Amino acid sequence: MDKVIIFDTTLRDGEQAAGGTLNAQEKLEIARQLEKLNVDVIEAGFPISSPGDFEAVRLIAREIRTPIICALARAAPKDIDRAWESVKEAEHPRIHVFLSSSDIHLGYQLKKSREEVLHTAGEMVARAKKYTDDIEFSPMDASRTEPEYIYQILKAVIDAGATTVNIPDTVGYAIPDEFGRLIEGILNNVPNINQAIVSVHCHDDLGLAVANSLESVKRGARQVECTINGIGERAGNASLEEIVMAIRTRKDFFNLTTDVNTTQIYKTSRLVSELTGFVVQPNKAIVGANAFRHESGIHQDGIIKMPITYEIMDPRTVGIPASSLVLGKLSGRHAFKERLAELGYSLSKADFDRAFSAFKELADKKKGITDRDIESLIAEELRTVSEVYHLDRVQISCGDRGIPTASVMLIGPEGQVLADAALGAGPVDAVYKAINRIVGVPNVLTEFAVKSVTEGIDAIGEVLIRIESKGITYTGRGADTDIIVASAKAYMNALNRLLAAKKAAG
Ligand code: KIV
Ligand code: ZN
Image (cartoon, rainbow, N blue to C red; front, side, top):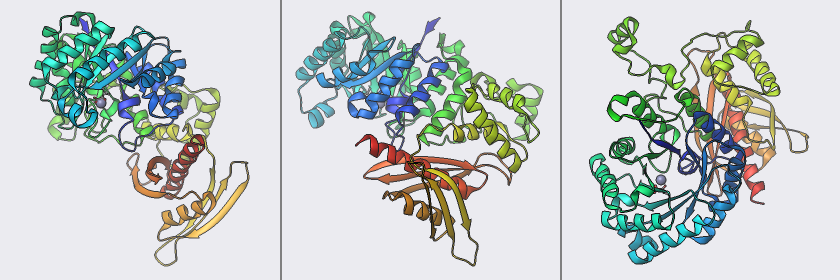
């Protein structure tokens, strides 16, 4: 059976989504999880775009050994040199060169002729080839490019050494049958195409990214570029979990396979959602909270009699824990450790100790602790942002008569204890004003959302916020059974990211 190569671009195109910025440690954490998911290629970033992204790609290239580590570059010498610098220590490095091919891009954006672009594409692939054998080339906006011209470009870049040629539907404009015919045309008309893998990269502007990708593999493409939870520029990219599970569930139709360890899908989806702050919609295929929930009586009756009546996939194949075992305050270290292992976590001794004491603290406040509570607790405890200011305590007084008042105590960069108080329009406003009086970094709150992790009045509340400073958005998350405390933690998380970015920029 033919294999489809899974090229994950969560850390590059996924991170390009507005408001989804990740720091280098967060990218590394996701890359570790992508390695467990067993994707074939990780596109780790676009190194020329910022020193932070260069550093993130380099960290990933040094540590992640099994998948190919790919760096993106425009078809320009300094981009390619920088891309190579970032991936040269990888076990399996790849450079991905892209250049627009449509007349729309050539005429309005690049202001170059077709001949010039054809020449540059070949020349830049040859430059990248001097560094490494594994070279990918993408004619950007391919789906709006005249097919004959794409054939010419692909022939030239394969002659120059490209080993993968990727066909992007950059603006999400293609329709499955039309895109499939483009792929078939490439396979039939590019004379040296058997020297390269044909790949596809689809965006979801018309909600067709997965359909276009699947149509392409049906017609002979053997690499698919996709992202976890379908995150990405504008409406996003093709969703990895949907593509992999469609190929697996409909093996009878595709007669294809992937090497993805599907039992890691759910955990990867949760991690990407936690770190990017992009909440997964409940009805999202494969990983949404309702994806395997049956509400109608007729469906429930069928499921009890035989799951196959209404369930085309076993939730355990994507790593959704089958057990609904609930832990409580009498649960010991052993039970907690076993539950963590079942959820796919293996923590160092120090991390486990921290997580266990947080679990005990939570169990004192909340009766039954579910898997979602544990996931939230782990995300909270092991958050990877290094803290400049640490929230030590927060006290609020509010109600329908008095003026909301907050006092906060923070531990500063030199370990100094810093305390202040403020009045506000509401309790969250008062807390944020008190924190601002200490930290003193101007910013604007652009998004604030609270959601409950599980059902019940004692549920953990998760707060997601976004703040903006000098045109850059920083995301913060916090979780607690008290939503004002969760709000304070989320604000500190976002502020610490802002301060870390400020420090990195000098
Ligand atoms: O959408 C696109 O065209 C891209 C390229 C860089 C491959 O992301
Ligand atoms: Zn893209």
